[in-house]
Image 1 (cartoon, rainbow, N blue to C red):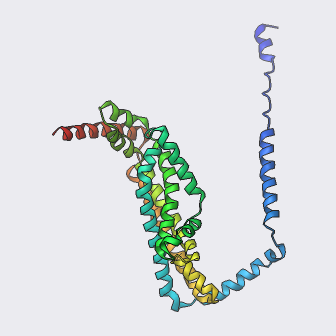
Image 2: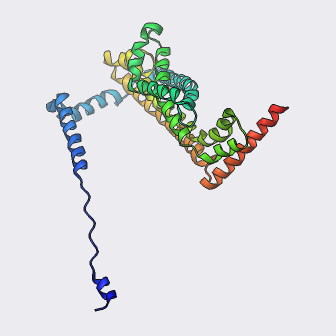
Image 3: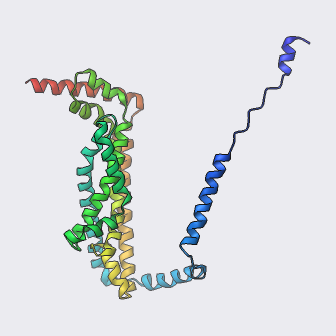
Length: 300
């Protein structure tokens, strides 16, 4: 037997089966936590079995037929909630936008970005309802309270999304702006912002969608909008008005979601929807031209 035949007949060693001990422990922990959660919340299974029947009963009270006379109030309350969400989102953008750059590892110094990240994390850990309760003593039970709570909650989320997008920006345009002799502000403007703008705009729109739903929950504590009307009608068992309110809320929310979704897709895949290589090259050239143009204007 030749050496070649002997080598051909050698059975290759079978790879060692990866150990799944850690995976098993993780899944066991998840199952254990789920079991503890079921035990802790004390589910009444007899009431849970009656849930389908009760849903059908209350759906009949609300929608067969809905109270058409409450349509005007329902639309007004829904518009107020949308206004709360819009004002809170814009205020949150104004505050979080500059802080996102300072919290990014490629922009802000270490002594500043870590405290900012801690602030963002603390804000995200507190629900908007709790924030609204904390500021009730200052602003009272008004729609402005809900808008401020939404704004504060948006700062935590938009700040985190912002600095993560900035840290993930392509280095080519930044290097081009730096090579052209740009200052830190010029590098951020021409080398960084042009790359992260589509993603940041999409985050802003997505946060507005979330805030529209959050405004309805804030109304439950008297902050105006959908929640206030819902609580009032449920307390007095005005189920027809509740049904009309839910119809208006669903229709307006779906419309906002569709418009926002189309705009976000247009931002990400439309105007900026070019290949990565061409996009990086063009942004690098734009960064260099922008820095050069800014330098010439400064000299003039």
